[in-house]
Image 1: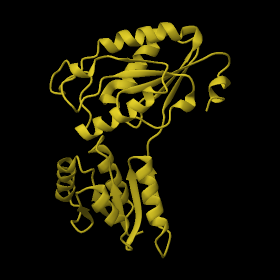
Image 2: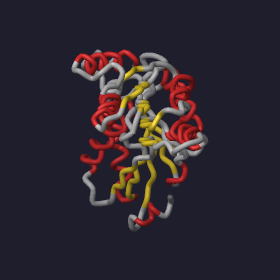
Image 3: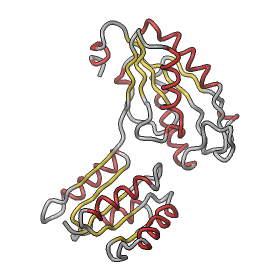
Image 4: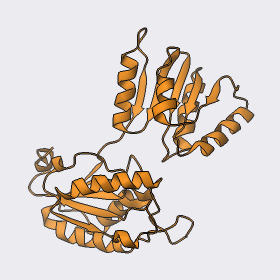
Length: 264
């Protein structure tokens, strides 16, 4: 089709970056690759390897910088034939509107964005298995995955037991430096991301019935860390947005599974 713009995120700075680039190249397109501004060195190393392997320099070019400037300028180029983007939903909508406003042929957009990933647990579930799955999904990688668990829907019959187990498991998580072999939960990508998560938490806590954090802020290693925590809410609709960190919303339900669906 021509020249593709590939805009990748920081949380999988090699896998997603290379996946976007390779998909465009193998289908015969040139690529303008813009990695996240937090991870340019990883992208630079990947592009160097691809060039060394025989990909022409003209067919794959690396452009680093903030999304607000470099990313926006790339999307605005009239010569591009497509955009692939992985990142937040608001940014994807900005790109969509920018492409739609251009004259000429429609420019395709492939966007993988965020969401509220949910786990529905009924009364027959094994509490130990649920606890292990919840802790692994919600808090590993400090919750910085699009696939991380964000909403846990617990049946009333086992909710107290499961929450007690989850609290115990969270208390055992070691929050610290990633270079330390004991660490289970490392920092967020940077202090700005942590500040954003804390601001979201402050809003979410006004709608929560109960909350639990594995550590107080004063015990965290630095400003880029957020403690693993859960918020007990009354309704699924109380989850207003994705919190991209080690934060889990919990809602209790009873009756048939349709009772949860009715809350949405």
